[in-house]
Every structure is written in structure tokens, then in C-alpha cells.
Length: 171
Image (cartoon, rainbow, N blue to C red; front, side):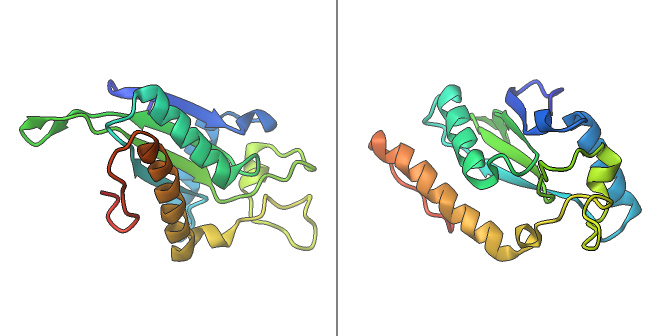
């Protein structure tokens, strides 16, 4: 996302706890997804942000939301951009992308990137990779986070006496 002209903000979170960069991680993760057909060690949320908030307010809002979900337990990257063209009309459309690892960081084991991405080993945790949170792949997880986003965004909109949004339409 860093090469986009409409990029407002980008931050890699919790990578400082490990021995590899976010760029290496996302590249290796993408490569793994290509090699193993039914395996993708990360997911992505795309979230519309309120046009009524400033860029800085949207940054703070999405950072708070992400921290609530992932804390210090998961690797994730936030990117906010605001394309302005919608068909023939020009209109600001801020939104965030949150790419997150499904693997929970184990702070007790120092792992290189290949080791981190290996399958989890129940018999010998130190030999395997980090454990995947399978709940993050379930529809319920997404629905729960939509409800949480509705609370976050409506809290900010309410402070400004602006119309609230619904998790069902996010309008």
C-alpha cells in the first residue's frame, strides 16, 4: 500500500517483537498461500471510515479498533487511503485495510520467519510454528467485529451529533 498516491497512513504493528520485517512476512505469507492451495496465514479487513472525521481522527479511531481486536498478540498492518473518484464524481472515500496474521505470537519462543509460518506442532511447540487462531476464519468472527466497529464508529459520530451507522449496511 505504501506506493499509493492516496495513502494517508500506514503502520506495521507488533513486528518489533520478532526477527523479521512486515515486508518479509507479507511476502512469505503470500508465497505460502500460492504454494498451499487451501492455506492463507493472514486475512484482511476493509473498513469504510467516516468522511466527516479528519484524517487524524480516522487514524486514531482505526488504531483503537485494531488494538482492541489484536492487542499485542497478532501481527498486523494498518493502511488508510482515501481515493476521491467515484465514477465520474469526485468524492472523498476514506477507508482502512487491516491485514492480520491468523497466528498468535508466542513471546516465549524466538522464531525466524520460516519457523513462525510453519504448522503448529502440538507435541513439540518449540519445533513448530505459531498456533493459528481458527476462530478468526469463522463468519462469527467477522460479524462480531462488524458489531464492534459499529460501536466504535457510532461513539465518534454521536459525539459530533452526526447520523449513526448500522452494522448491517454500515450506512
